Image 1 (tube, one colour):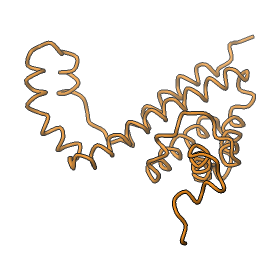
Image 2 (tube, one colour; image 1 turned 45 degrees about the vertical axis):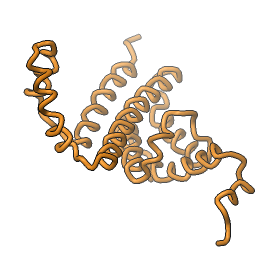
Image 3 (cartoon, helix red, strand yellow; image 1 turned 135 degrees about the vertical axis):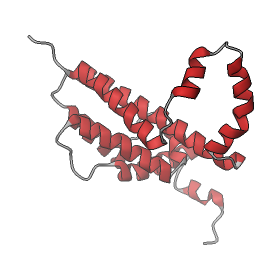
Image 4 (cartoon, helix red, strand yellow; image 1 turned 30 degrees about the vertical axis):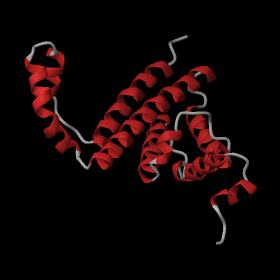
Length: 185
């Protein structure tokens, strides 16, 4: 193409503007093809679609949670999300509901991507890292100073990232449902 890396700056002003364009482009992958009939399903689809998109485009995890995307795809995702909750509660409650679900899946996605990056950076899978850290953790737990952590290490069931994400999302949606339920008049 005979174009250097600064060539794009003839069309965009800043690196942030480039990021905005990139984020808006991937919002097309997040946008539901059709509006689900139920608010829970709409928010569940939003969360899972965002996760799947971030797994395909890991850089997205670093840009989630900031200012809203104002491009056409980002606005369409926001419109679809708000439309799914329209009429269920006052707009302020709806906004807090969307923010709460978004905060959950943003944090969960960032944690998952950070773990994937750590695997690549260290060359150790999660299981290999646990084995390598095992002797230290065992010694620390044996001190008796960490009884709750000891119980978690020895008694909890390990689940994969997708199952953990889905379970946490269901819990957050249950909490949101409690706030969207209108008290009797």
